[in-house]
View 1 (cartoon, rainbow, N blue to C red):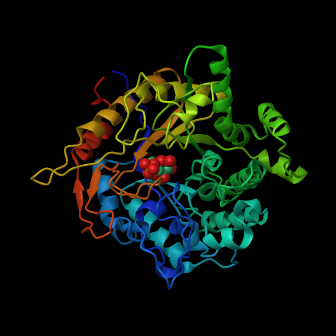
View 2 (cartoon, rainbow, N blue to C red):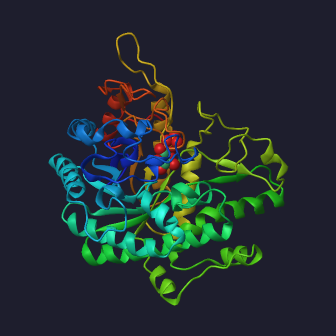
View 3 (cartoon, protein in one colour):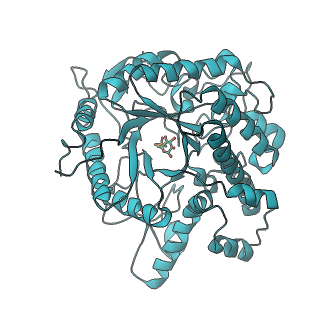
Length: 466
Ligand code: BG6
């Protein structure tokens, strides 16, 4: 029987801004996520602590107060690890303070202690789709080089504080998303020029590399990875023009992994900058800093898409954040995300061939509407099917010789969706009684997939059906 290795890290993934709620509790400052109630594709809606605008994320699923119950449920499924993030604005409410907020630090101490009770290893993202809002208002986000120092100070604070508790770290969630949603990624408005966005990205890449170095210095036994949105693209046809366009489209996101894994800007990107009038301010020190490369590559994978050299094809596709064409050979989720388990095996092989560093699938899952049955149970066979088929391909990739550290499905429990800030798009093994108005009872309930995943972990993948 094909097996997953015994050290394989089975688990689930969350992000602070999508589960915690308590958005101003215990001294937390506003973050970019707090001013985007309609999600990362929605507008910024200014708010202050007095004039509050309702936002589902203010409460979310109240993980801030209910984490002991949730972690106990994860432990019941047999999780070996749990990926979540630290909200930067809990530690430095405005981002530019010298002294951290002790209450914020204490909160994560308790969360990590709770995980330790069950032997669940934390996998911690330093910045998952949020940063202190003051850094955007006062400095213009990552466009300002000072953000590198603020981020480094924040990372030093949490590495030092949690050095005994956290040994697996990720720098920026889906760092390549800045190309599509610059406010969420680098704190820049959508109207920003390509030069401005790439300069901000450069600062973020330098910050990522600097904290890799810092992590190795402060916690020598820890491992730290990057996090990419695994945007696998296929050519729409076998026309050489489509194949080349696909290579170039894939380079747009692989570029981030190339810099973070190889330590310098690849030639194809320098050409792109040259031909598009993009001149980046890169210092000699930046070049040195970038040489601090990640220990492993982590990524999310939900779907694949197609690319063509014929630009007019894109105009026919609506609401397309990722600039991709529908694949006629694949089914889609209710949200139009195309389901492609085989693509995960292809992507794992591609990333392994390219980087020869361990890979960690830190997000994969199906967003779907769950309707409780009359007896209150949730029969989410569609989710089981999706996860089963993807895990079968992970196992195939291991057979192909790919070094895979683990798999944390998204999200281990229902949470607020990132793109539109809605809760009806559910991902969890655990149902949360919450609605779009934020008035649910927040009761937790095991779905059918909860029992299924428990068995998959127990049998080390042996119960998966081919
Ligand atoms: C990833 C993000 O892009 O996709 C998560 O890292 C997000 O934060 C997940 O929740 C699923 O996207 P959505 O929009 O369905 O929540």
